[in-house]
Length: 124
Image (cartoon, rainbow, N blue to C red; front, side, top):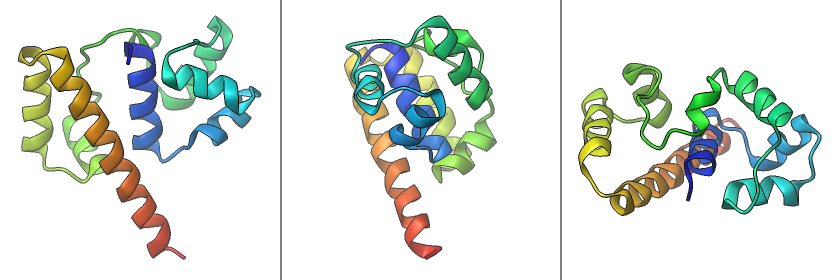
């Protein structure tokens, strides 16, 4: 994964937005969105501007591989983790090899998606 698609995956998981919803909002076909998510394509500058606006993030967020997250307590609440766990993950981002961080990103994405799905089942 490159920085753009990893960060886009994370924002989708945290926000509870799925790829189809974002594709529709940006007026792009789902296969194109999937190419952005798998790293084989990227949005144009106008699409990136809209993505950044929708998620309230600066453009630079999508291109930096090591970020500080917007707010530790907020991220902890989004992910259902303790603040200490989020702080530990942030510290690891500075010291662990990229492969380890990629695996953690994938695990967090899967966990956030499962939490979101469980919330959807509870509200039905």
